[in-house]
Length: 383
Image (cartoon, rainbow, N blue to C red; front, top):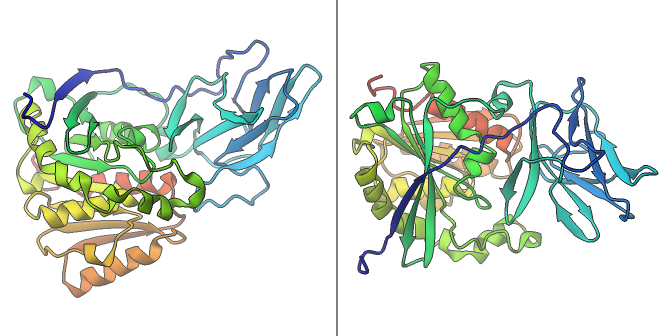
């Protein structure tokens, strides 16, 4: 085993579905937070009699239509205290969506102690809630799975870190011997193996679409492509400069290890080696890696999904037998790269689908793109 660059560990674990409700049971005596009102407004509360100031940070509109929806940046607002030391703030009615937020007091940010649900964003955690009312946001509300998920680890000696993988296995996986189509789903620059689950609701989407017979049963592989966790430690310098601070994204560390990872998964899971039953997709910088994988491994993937892609001109497609699906919002910060990719694909007579939506570089769009992409791939596979 010492000569094997990978150590394997698998474990079945419970799906961390987002346990959302209109009223979240208080963990702090006398407060309940957040409270979602019938008109879609939300009240946040935090009790701390010793605090002089408390701020709320949320990726929603806190300042009367000044929110930049194309980026999902956090807005901040000062919460108002009452005589008992409970700080509160109520938003205007919000659009149905999955939202994240934090409080700040005494110079530090922290999750809402009255909300048990949180997700990791960059190197911090944020509390999270769902405002129901749209098809894609409702997928993020707790529901029972017909399939299941597993956690898979492998040791990468070259990287010096454990690479973690989240897998979705479809219904009846344990009751059949068939090989399943496989989708590799890659996170963006500030994500990890659970990013697509936590904010993209990927597992819920796949499971529901299989139940509705809108897609074929498939295995979805969500790896951590950034195990060194260097991205995000210099948040103030900006996303693209952060990318340059972590050369392995540009030097293709994940692309290097992918063949060994794919081989190990093929041994331990019943995934197809038939190119027509294999796809890879990613968002933002993950789309760059998906494009790299398709170019380097021309015979491994029939479908390549690029969601708000950060794609260099040298990563443009070369294989005419691969089908690309490109999704981009009209105000996406990388929209020009998507349109350039589409133009070059036309020039090279490469098969592609272009989905031009409203909005920008946001999970709102990436959930939509995933839903569309899932219903596009593996049409030739047997149901």
